[in-house]
Length: 325
Image 1 (spheres, one colour):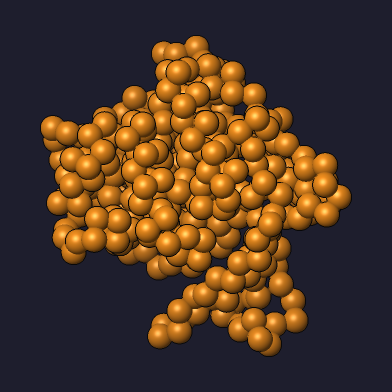
Image 2: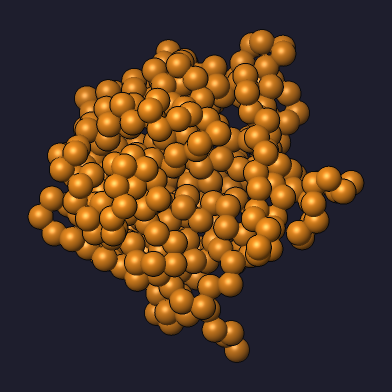
């Protein structure tokens, strides 16, 4: 077992999430519930709740809204000592609004994150020697889409991790409101070739490759494209698959899931996957563990998988969400 002090370090933007109650429309809403959300902080919180030692880095403004974010993360046990506070008095925290839909009306997200403090992250903001004491570095495709300086910061993170011998995971996490596929592809290709594991939703893999194929083929194609990383393809209610260059691994999704809130399910999967891999589970078992955490997240409002090991263990043993008496 490694003696490194941190199990995982991640960096990215966390925002205030504002949503009306139930399926009320934003156009009529008079009250909005405040939570925090962001792919990397979602993973950090979920992993700490699963017993891991995790740090989250970002750049935040010096105001009460940022204090709210830090209070939540600290409250769950996430190390935020590496967070940088922007000296600019006009620095702002990004926000996003969710209007939950019920079929046939979709759930919609409205971002207000342009020129946020996080979008001004710089490569020299952080003490990269921390990676020498970290087992896994987790990054997402969201952060390099925020700005040129964020892209440079993510590239620096990968370079430093490679030097430190830290395992690098990249979640593609494409956001069409942040950048185009033409802008995304070369950045993702460069980062993926230096990563040890890449996670992608099947829909994103098809867009990146410009093909319409099944998950197994997508995983093999992406491995051939990047050569180095194990590739994991998620596809919601369908099985999760992974290809490591020699074997194809598959884990079924959990049945009987009645979604309460779909936001953050992919981050929950990534947290569960990391947890299992950090405990040296084989890849097939890690996929199943990730699927279990994602399934539990779908039953919880908010961005974060507020679950514990006992709940994951129970679901893995039962294979369903039946009432426990």
